Amino acid sequence: MSAHGATVPVELRTLVPEQWDAWYATLEEAFGGVAEAPEERALWRALTETGRSLAAWDGDEVVGTAGAFSFRLTVPGGSPVPAAGVTMVGVLPTHRRRGVLRSLMRRQLDDIRARGTEPLAVLTASEPTIYGRFGYGCAVERMSLSIDTTRVSLAAPEGTDAVRLRLVPPEKAADRCEELYAERVPLRPGMVARGPGWERLPLLDPESRRDGGSPLRCVVAEEDGRFCGYALYSVKPEWEAAGPSGTVRVRDVEARSPRAYAALWRFLAGIDLTSSVVAHSRPVDDPVLHLVSDVRRCHVSVRDLLHVRPVDVGAALSARAYAAPVDVVFEVEDAFCPWNTGRWRLTGDTGGAVCAPTRDAADLALSVRELGSAYLGGVSLAALAGAGRVRELRAGALERAATAFLSPVAPWLPHGF
Ligand SMILES: CC(=O)SCCNC(=O)CCNC(=O)[C@H](O)C(C)(C)COP(=O)(O)OP(=O)(O)OC[C@H]1O[C@@H](n2cnc3c(N)ncnc32)[C@H](O)[C@@H]1OP(=O)(O)O
Image 1 (cartoon, helix red, strand yellow):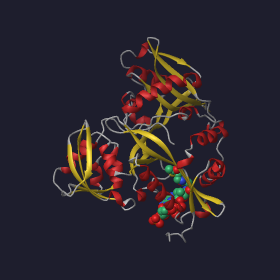
Image 2: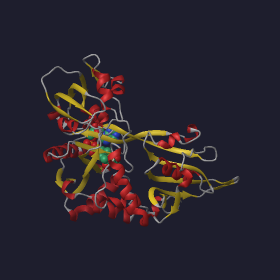
Image 3: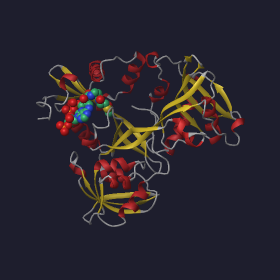
Image 4: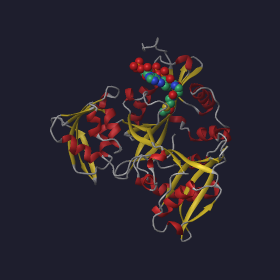
């Protein structure tokens, strides 16, 4: 019985390709019933891994959906670790709060564990309050910026003026952009290698999502004739009594050098007839924060992005490296996946780690959710301890573990899924 009504006795079945339309229609209904543009729908259809997607049936009706992508996610130290990218979760409004999501999450985590290859599950949540009960912790935040470019100037490191910028249709630059993206993936925890088909995601640009803005533009940066960066953006023109006040909407910026990075942002901030540059998903340590003359007029805000759930605590903690030597025993509580509950000894350093069950006394006590939050190195165990969510059982253990877990580069990923 759920808190809101009798549990619905749904039957969970693996999605078969012929049922994709009905399945996806349920998902769209759960999200409010606005149909996606045909190209968007076609992309998600192509990317759906039906064999690991679940449909909850009530009689002959699909009332709930949950999918998973087979990702390789960068973890601290730079290794790619297999992770289930949980996606397309929805329950019909007629069936909400009667345990359908809970049964989908139960089955999905059991399936991921049974595969034996993915120590982690990750997701971006429609609402951050939903997934903590299933052991997901917020591990990555994203930063939004709205730069008032009538007041803010950008610094130009030496060599910036030598960077040549060129407007190129996004499809024409796509291969070179993907290559650069692939180079960046190991450099930041949270980044996901884009498998076949995913290269279309950054170019997805349905008219229905433009909200009065231009089609997607691409500017590429070149140094000595070599491709060294790109920005994907659009422009939303606007006219006020006092003059033009358009907005540059940034979708992505990547570069191989600080010169190219600065040149791209300076370009975006200087487009005629615009007075602001808006970017909704940047890493919280984006170097652009150190290029601007007035960070307050960049209207920075931060919100949750990626939630991480260790499915196999031992394998997950063994798969990453640590910024400093660490030898710590965790007392882990995991109500939803009890196979993780117990004491785990983690020993590791910058070269790698081993994490295995132990009978030794615990140094730190926490739930699997806090381990998920700290896993990518962007959330400090010390901050979680400050909230009472990590308990130090041996003096000094918290500081050492917190130092070892942190990443010098903030985790991030450039797009949802
Ligand atoms: C990874 C992704 O795809 S994120 C996208 C998630 N989907 C959406 O937001 C679409 C719109 N919403 C929905 O489809 C549904 O409301 C869902 C999927 C969020 C929840 O499905 P339901 O079947 O209603 O959830 P279910 O009844 O299993 O609830 C399980 C628990 O979570 C809680 N819960 C579920 N949804 C919410 C919510 N939006 N806010 C707060 N608590 C919630 C329930 O109260 C219940 O708590 P309890 O165990 O203490 O009783």
